[in-house]
Image (cartoon, rainbow, N blue to C red; front, side, top):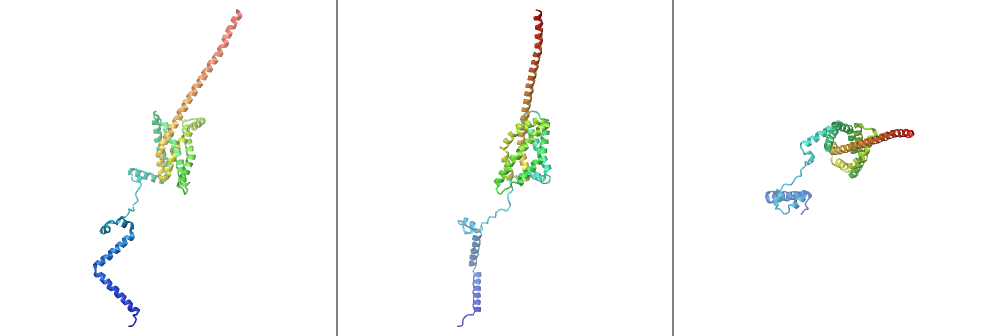
Amino acid sequence: MAAATPLYRALVRRKIQFFRWQRSRNNPTNQQQQKRSQSSHNHNSNSNSSSSSNSNKPGHAREEDPVPVPSTVAALPLWQRLGPLTRAAQAYARSQRKRPYVTQVCTSLVIYLCADISAQRMNGKGYDPHRTVRSLIIGGLSSIPSYKWFVYLSHNFNYSSRILSLLVKIGINQACFTPLFNTYFFAMQALLVGDTLPEVWDRVRRTVPVSVVNSLKLWPAVTAFSFTFIPLEYRSVFAGTIAVGWQTYLAYLNRQAEEEEAREKMAHLSSHAQAQAQAHAQDQAHQALPETISDKIPKKATA
């Protein structure tokens, strides 16, 4: 018998494949088994974790359970879901981007107004409008330099370590900005009242060291939180909210210094008046002493 040629072997293989395909087509049971095997193979290859969690369930339950799809929409932060407050913050951010200087001046005026009114209410005395005007002048003049300073801090001293960046920014802010700003605040308060330069220096000497030490209890934590969690356009609002209480404290401290200076002036005037009265009494006594002596001498001579 002659050997089969390659063409003959190819025809035989093709015919065998055709017969197998036809038999599987006529037998629906085999077709379902093939589909199940293919679906189970695809399911196992795509989600191994899902198949392992559903291993104790029936087969039909595993096939009918839908595959959970994670949500692709990111959740909004809490401050963006506060309704009117969110819209007000967004309007402030737009104004900050368009007109930063005007926005900062208006923000500072509102902060200093609220702080001065709060400080005057704490004193329990009558309202002094001149004191409010002085506070508004001080706040308006310091608004732009303060804003530029914090923008400078935001854009500089940024290292690979986030903690190191925060520590450097807090240290520079406490070492440079806080003493200068407190000196400006108390010196301007004294100058606007009409004090002389020695009196201004005495006011600064009394108030600045105390305020700088007390600022260490508040502003490092506020600065760290602001640079970590607050966007740049909202940092002035956050710092302004804290600054209402801080400016209230500074105004209260300035008022205490004014009252202490007034008491010292009154004590100095009273002591000076007492000294003058004593000197006048001594002068009168010295003037009266020669008259008495001259009155006694002639009487002795005549006797």
